[in-house]
Length: 108
Ligand SMILES: [Zn+2]
Image (cartoon, rainbow, N blue to C red; front, side, top):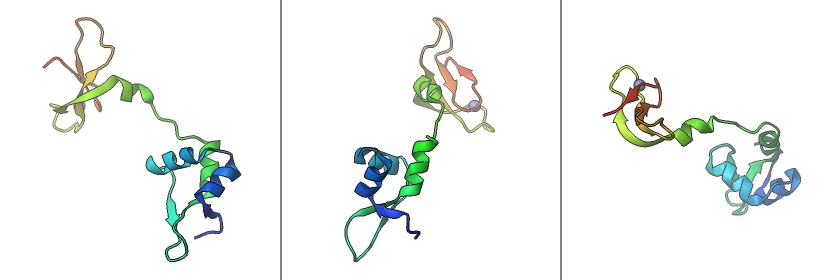
């Protein structure tokens, strides 16, 4: 462990974020947490990793998540491996479902 590991509350204060934000990063798998077993029961985080998360937030394409909802099973193209999901905002009369990997449209 490097010397940038500090108790979670201290890391939050140092970087200037709410403790709940740090907990959310941990839950999302963006930040590792450490424990000093036998020393105390607090959660430690790498304050430099937290600072880096604030500098370069991990951005992802939210459109896919918003538009692809209910899972209707595997894509019919067996080599694809994607899942067929509901399309949000599909045009009237358009295909209501789409593979989340190859983009194939499905009407069932
Ligand atoms: Zn597919």
